[in-house]
Length: 349
Ligand code: KG4
Ligand code: ZN
Image: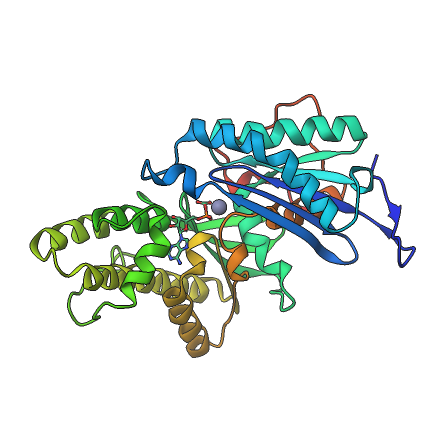
């Protein structure tokens, strides 16, 4: 069933994976070539659509994915001078995410795969984030500890190999990206809040306020970020003119809590490599804090490039490539979405 085509330039047999991301508010398309790596990708962000509501409106997200996904696939293929018939397999985000939004990617992937008579595979969105640093020239090697920080998840994982994941810790309440977004909202910043809060924090005075580092005095690797948001709300009510200082205090508390738990996870597992991915890994202050920790522990720290920290199609094409090229497929007749899906339930590759 796997279609290997001779490369136009080298003549070598190659496998080209089309990746489709539509789990939330970004339509992303990527093309991954087995010999050349990532050959094309494009993204349409729905930020402008959701901004006036102060957050993602699921129904609007699904409707927009429907409009964007096919033109984006065409645009990426055109950019790299390929056609649909050059694609060997299609990977789409099957979950976790918004059900309606996931259904769009799944339906398009499955009908396209059926019409082209090629395999399709539902990919775990967080595995896409986790593997995104492998799109870079300097790639981490297995095994490693991964810190995944997005709008929906905060996870510390022992990554033994692709698909062999042990969750070491996770957030018991708000994900760290969600805490950034909610705190930004409290401070009157727009949506999406994380980048806006990070920008404002640059002007803040770090000495002005000290927020707690939640759960660091307890053993274990779980997180809790909802208290930080409450702390920010109470401080803002008392000091309404010190927005930037509050943003700074929040960012410092969130990033140092993540760093303390990463350090603990690295010491516990004895791993020498840390991978940090997901939307919040774009945060410059977090990167500086983790880089400094890496130097002091003798641990190499890897991130995706900035544009692949947040949702994108390239990471789905990559994750799909590893699995599809080994023959893993999702049956065509299956709807194939999993809005709730635990990383530990994935198959090894
Ligand atoms: O991975 P992602 O694009 O989507 C999910 O899978 O959730 O992550 C989005 C999250 C949002 O909460 C957003 O505010 C946060 O990542 N984010 C940031 C930054 N850039 C994006 N948070 C802090 N600092 C940033 N620079
Ligand atoms: Zn994501």
